[in-house]
Length: 155
Image 1 (cartoon, rainbow, N blue to C red):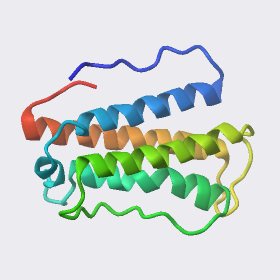
Image 2: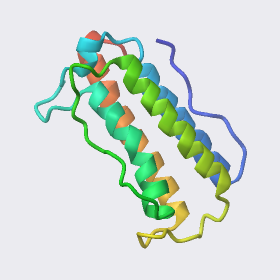
Image 3: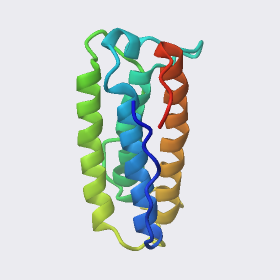
């Protein structure tokens, strides 16, 4: 696994945050994409957290904030970390990439970081920073789980 560095970018606030957002998404995918399905499904800590469980959670996390909270759309996306025997690395990453593409479409259509969300007393800026924070936190979790599985380290 190569060690990808964070983006080197000289841009405005939104573009910088979006660049880190996309970097973290890809780092998360890279940590999981070459794992055997069984290893990716297996919880690495007593709470039951697994690499695929985190991918499944993140598949809905951004869309909860963008579509449900900010834009006011239904339904509320799934946020669970439950993994089934039919979940595969390939299927979970495909779902995550599809959700990320949808989120990117929304991010690209929104410019006013001071706009307040439809359902929450939060600005778009808060939502963008929060989703970067959530991705970073869960990327760290996946780093630890991956190291426990096979010793792989790096970004």
